[in-house]
Length: 582
Image (cartoon, rainbow, N blue to C red; front, side):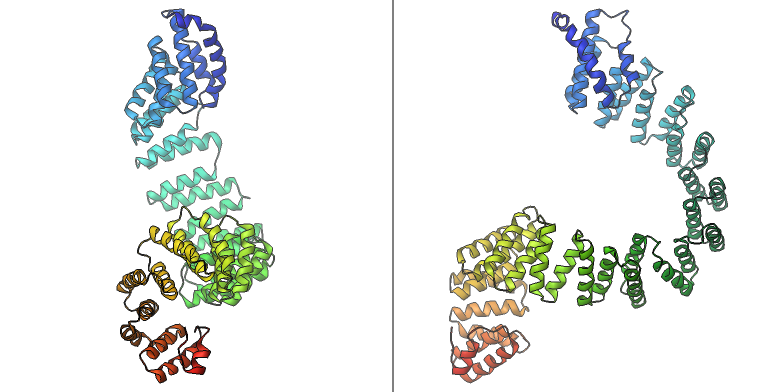
C-alpha cells in the first residue's frame, strides 16, 4: 500500500487533468463531482487515494477506447471504494459498448441505487433496455425520471418512441401532447401524431391535426405542403386542391403550386390537366431544377414506354430552355437522348454540360462511352485526357484513353495509359483483368512480345477461365508461330465453352492452319465463313483454300475479304498475284 501513499500528489493532479477528459467523454461535470464527494467516513485516506488513482487510469483508457484495460482499472477502483456510483456507471458504460447488456444493467442499476439523483445513470439504463428492445422497462425508467425531473419534458420523445414500438399509439400521442403543451406545436410532432392516427385508421383526426398546425403557422407554406401531401396520399383531392388554392391566394407566384396541382390531377386520372400543370412548372425558372430533374429521372425509370419517353424528351427540352446556364439541364437532356439511342445529340448535350461544370464524373463517363460506341477515337483521346485532368485517380478514364491510342495503333502510348489504370485497379479484380488484357494487346502491337505474354499470364492468374484473354493470347501466339501446342490448348478450352462463336472458332482454325493441319482448319472455316461479315475470317479461309490447292476459290474469298474490310496489309498483293503471301 505504500506505493499509493507515495503517489498521492500525482493522483490528485490526475484528478484535475481527467476532469476535462471526463467532460470530453460526454460524462457530466456533476457526475465527476459526485465521485469527488464520495463517502469517506468509512474509507481510509489511503483507500480514497487508491480508488481515485485507478478511476483516473480507467478514464484515460476509456477515452482511448481501451475498454479492457479501462474496466480492469475501474474494478480495482471499486475494490478500494465499492460504494462509488460513478465507478459503477463507467463499468456499465463499457459493458454496454461491448453489448453485454446483462452486466451493463447490473452495474447501471447499482449506480442508481448508490445515487438516485443522477439523471445520467437513469438514461444509461433506459438506453440499455431500448437496445434490448425491452421497451416496457425503458418506459418505467423514463417515468421515474420524469417524476424526479418534471422539467425535462424532452424525455417524452423517448416515451413516445417506446409506446409506438409497443403499438400503444394512444399513449404515444399523449406523450407528444405533453411536448406540444410545453413547447408549442411543431411540424415534426404533428407529423408523428398524424402517422400514429393513420395507423389507427383515424384519417379525419390526422387531417385535423394538420389543420391545427396550419392555424398555428398560417404563413408557413411548407407546413401547408405537408398537409397537401397527406390529403393526396389519402385521395382527398378536393381538399388538397382547396388548400393549394389558398396557397396561391397568399402567394400567386408560388413556384411549386403548379407541380402540386399536376400531382393532384394525375392522382385523379386527369392526365391532360396534369401534363398542362407539369409543363407549366418546368417552364418556371423559380421551380428548383433538382425537383425537375428528379421528376424526369422517375419517368426514365419507368421506360420503355413510348408516351413517357416522348414526355421526357419534351420536358428535358423545356428544362434546357428554362435553365440554359445550368449544367444539370444539359446532363439530363443527354441522358434522355442517350436512352433514345440519339447518341450524337446526347454527346452534344453532355459536352454543353461539362462546359459549364466539368466536375461531374458520370457526365464524363457518358461522353467517353459514346465516343467509343460511335468510334470517335480522336475525340475519345481528347475527352479521356481532359477527364483525367479532373479525375486522375479514376481508372475508367485511363482505360478509355488507352483504348483511343490502341485504335490509333499508337501502342506505346496505349500501354502507358493501361499501366496507369492498372495501378489504380489493384482492389478490383475484374477491372485488373481488363487492363492486363489490353496491355497484352498493346505490347503485342508494339512487338514487345515478352511483356505481352507476361500481361496475359497475369490476367489468367486472376481469372483462369477468361475466354477473351485466352482467345487473344492464343491468337497472338499463332501469329508469331510460337508455343503452338499451348495456344491450341487455350483455344480449345474457349471453343468448348463457346462452340458457336465465329471469332473464337476463327482463332482455333487459324492455329490449326499455322500447325499445317489445313483440312481440319478448312472444316471449321466452312461452318462460319458463309455467315460471316468479318474480313479477317474470310481472308483466313482463302489462305486455307490456297494451301489445299484451291487457288481460284482462294482468290474469290480474298476479294470478298477486301470488300468487307478488316483484312491484312497483304490482301492487295494476294489478289494481284493470285498467290499466298504470309
